[in-house]
Amino acid sequence: MFWTLAFAGVTAVFYADGVNERRHPILIVAGPTASGKSALALALAAEFAGAIVNADSMQVYRDLPILTAQPDEASRRAAPHRLYGVVDAAENFSAGAWRARAVAEIDAIRNEGRVPILVGGTGLYLRALLDGLAPTPPVPAEARQAARALQAELGAEAFHRVLAQLDPEGAAKLEPADRQRVLRAYEVAKATGRSLGEWQRGQSATPDYAAVIILLLPPRGHLYAACDARFLRLIEGGAVEEVRALLARNLDPALPAMKALGVAEIAAWLDGAAGRESAIAAVQQATRNYAKRQYTWFKHQMPERPGLRKLTLIEQYSERLLPEIFSFIRQFLLTPES
Image 1 (cartoon, rainbow, N blue to C red):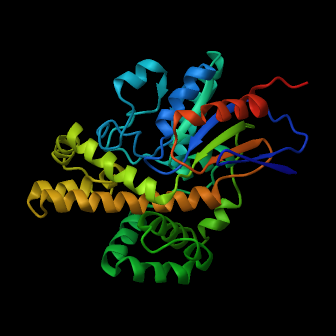
Image 2: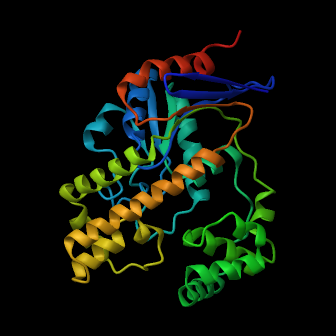
Image 3: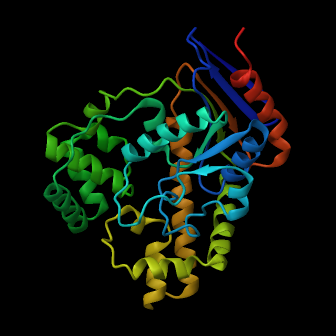
C-alpha cells in the first residue's frame, strides 16, 4: 500500500505493509550532479544530529577532491563526513566494496547516537545498499581485457549490437553511450554464459533499513546551468593542477578514477590537443549528459518498497524548502512508534 502527498512543488510517496519500518533508520539525499545534495545533507546533519556518508563513485577517490567536488574543510568541520577520499586512484573500487564500507559506517554512526545521512548521485551504490548485490562471479582478467579491446575496436554502437545478441534484455535497458555498463553486461554474459539480469535476480541479503529518500530533480534547464557554473568554479579552485598530478602517475586509463568527468578533456588541454575554451565546453557538455542520465535513472529506477519513504523536490535545493523537508522526516521516519 502507498500514499502520495503533494505540496509546495513537492511530491511525497511513502509505503507501509505492517513491517517495522523504523528499524535502522537512515536518510538518503539523492539526485543528479549539481542539484544541491551536499548543501541539503549539511542542513539535515545539523537538524538531526547526523553524520554524512558519501554515495558517489568518484568522490571516494583521494586524488580528485576538487574535480569531483568533494566537501571542503568548512563542510567537514560542520558535520562528520565518511567515505570521501578514502580510495587511491590506482584501485578499481566497486559497488560491492563501497556497500561493505557503507554498511559498516552506518552501524558505527548509529552506535554513536547519530543519524546516518547518505548523499550521492551514484544510483548503483544506493541500489546496492537498499536492495543488495547480485552474486556475480569475478570475470577473469583476460576476458575483461578482451571485452575492452573489442569495444575499442568496434565503437559504442556496434559493441552495443554485439551485446544485444548475447543479452537482449540487458542491451534494451542500456544506451550505447553508457559504455561502462554495456561493457560490464557484455563481459559477464560472455564469461559466465548468464546475463547480468539473471545474476541480479538472485540478489544478496541486505540490512533491513528503513529510509527517507530526499530526491532532488530540478528542472533540467536550471540543472544544466548549475552544472556549467560549477565546473568553472572547479577550474578556478585547482582542478587542472589536480588532473596534472593524476596524469603524472601514469595509471591504467581503464581505471574508474581515470574516467572521472573532466580528466580526459583536461588531459587533452594539457597535452595541447585542445584549447582551454574547447576543453571547458567539452567537460560542461559531458557533465550535462551525465546529469541527464542520472535524472532519468532517479526518476524511474530509484528503489521503492515497504520501509522506504520518498520525497521528490522538483526544483533546485534552497533553504526555503527545509521546513517541509524537516516535517516530512519527523512525521514519517523519526517519530517513535506507538
